[in-house]
Image (cartoon, rainbow, N blue to C red; front, side):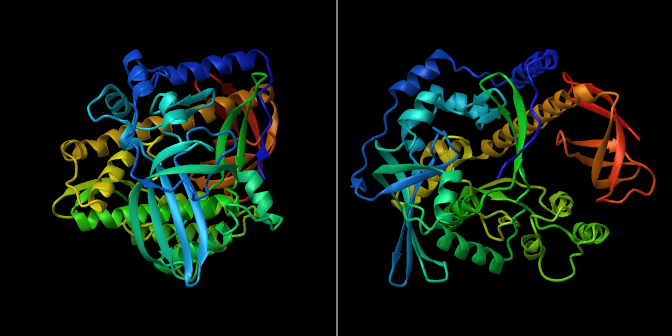
Length: 471
């Protein structure tokens, strides 16, 4: 369940925080509003009606509560020798005209950004939250992946088709998890079974999941803010396995066709592994046997030392990027954490690159040539996605920094107890319990991770998102 931090109540600090968050959003050169011609084109956009009709299949979506930009819908069923998984993706390639106003603006934005005071969407909401979204009880064109899994969850075969579908239910994570815990049936009844099998296949491949707690700034209707930190629910991890399976299928299609864009990450080198081993020993949770993914999965989420271990493991999950090819394959095609070639192909409403992956995969599946617009713009994508990724990272970290400074404003001059997560020389990363702020601070000599030390709050600058402590 979510662990909520103390909120920032309406006050002078609250007013200063609101101004700081507005200034931060405006500094990113990604305006919330769209040019009039982009909105007009999105409102008129209409994808052709598919010839294949799958509306009799009871698809369902599973997203955070209240979501409107629904990229994926699933249908799970048992068959005699395994399972059939259908995974429908919003047909964004069918709605967005290459070279048009919506396409041009989407290339500038790269991805949907999630700010504390609302989203900065990739596409106009008339498209992303209405016409192309897989909302319940409306007919929608979609790109439907159909997987045949054996009893162990291994993909025996798959296909991709464009079809007309109708989602019958919009599920959210918390209520779906509760229903599954009660043993209830419903659209997600097989998700724990299939998701667990796919996680086991990930283990056998040598894949690894970091699963750090989510940290999100929440704005309430009364104008107050708080930071919510929580571990993903099991249902989220099971659901993520459907997306990972689809991304691996998309990668295999593009590799076989000799054209595509892959999401890659290099395998950590021995120096990184050795440093991580030393860190786990210092934290009292030594990694001595097995692959690092297996070690991370065995960590007890209730253990207070698990978070410091996961923070240390983040050094093994670096260097992710995109690589394109049209002809010869690049030398590196694997995503190391997944332990397989992988492509982003399941979130086209919120991420630019997925539209290219889907357009390629559909053309290959239908035996057509890959569209010219895809080939002509393929090499532009890595830089566009890197730039948008940097904006997203800046927005996320700076927003949290500003809110944390506001949380600590009333405590300036006070002494607080801090748990040490990581030590780097004379400084380290610390975690406060109330308010639950994570920050960098100077540490007493010979401090070890896991220790609790008293620190004085010297300064909290909301506008800059800076906090200063002293020993």
